[in-house]
Image (cartoon, rainbow, N blue to C red; front, side):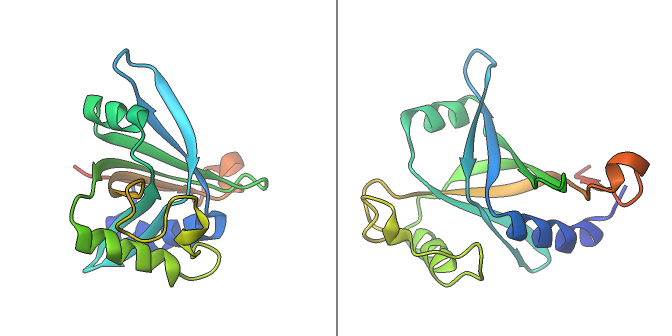
Length: 159
């Protein structure tokens, strides 16, 4: 088992190279639902936090009310994978929403982009613009070579 400090940088590097991930939630009947989303991750004061700009659709809202957890799974065609299982929460604070907007607007390639390209998102105050905050409780980084040998896989879980 890796320490939190050992896994943060390898996860961040792989996630930001892959960019898009499959994010899973669970509905009120315990059924999973997945969608492809684009988190940006940061380390602040030694803590990894993810941010997703998204629409607060009725389905996403209902799923997160049912279970406030998501699974974010990244994959490359070469079979490098990394995953973060997280507590997820909607951000209501307008200053934080504006800061997340700026993180994406000024983010490093290839994760940064101009949020205005999304229809209806003129600014962080746009009615259809929402932000999810991700706080990982379990992280795995598995380069493709580790699939055969098991060596090189990093796993951390909050106690």
